[in-house]
Image (tube, rainbow, N blue to C red; front, side):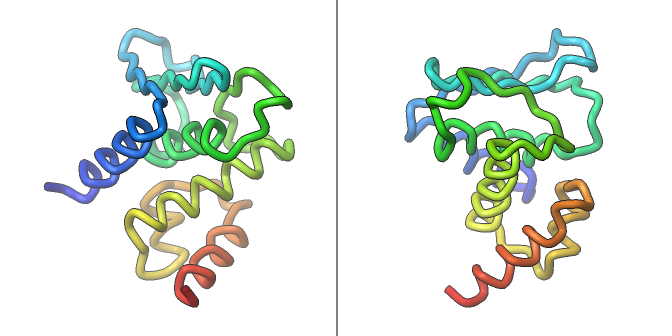
Length: 135
């Protein structure tokens, strides 16, 4: 099994264990972002989304909104790789942690490249990488 499929299977398994429904939609246009609906515990992944950020990272990010987010803050989130809102930064950090717990990269740069994570998150990737090494 390829690394991509292994990571995707792990993310879908985490979703299933936490009663989160993940719908992969191939009918949406490229300008529709992925969405996490907190109260319904559902994620809509747009297979055709026009972002450079990898599908796996986006899925981990949306899962993080439901698994670790503040349900009193918002009822739904749309993926935006450059938003600096507190809830988005937390989802980014938890997505990084989640993905590293599934497949530890050889270094922060390989993580950034594999998932095509926005450059402004390099510090968070490096910090999580070092934290994982210490555990």
